[in-house]
Amino acid sequence: MATTQRTNQDVSEAQIDDVVLERRSWNFGYLGADNKQRHHHVDRKRGRIVVTKSRAERDDSGAVPVFSLEGPILHTEGIELASNGAGGDDVREWIAFIGQECGGWADRPVSAADQLNDVLEEVC
Image (cartoon, rainbow, N blue to C red):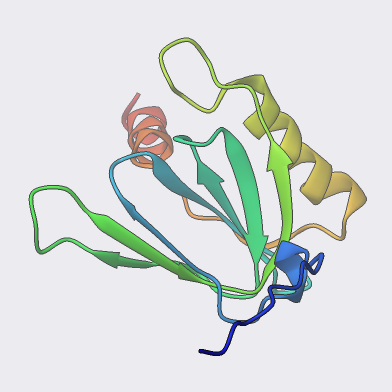
């Protein structure tokens, strides 16, 4: 009977090319792509921002959407969420930081609330 020896290696998340994160919940959000084509995501369940080379895919075929995100993970940043689970100040600060200090945003999705606000301003 042969025995195998386990070796411990330190491998950071950024070194793994095929990382797949999957969330079946409403606790995932997409912040946008920066000018270096890095995609920024909010994982509210784990209280973090995840930066990857690709955008998550969303499957709405079930009662709760499933978000699939392929790596590599370039960076993760822990965040504090608001008491109601919303993004809070840390998410707003991250958005401002990327916009001002890291080359800016190439693509930022517009929220439904922002769109409604724009429509109301045009009507009034």
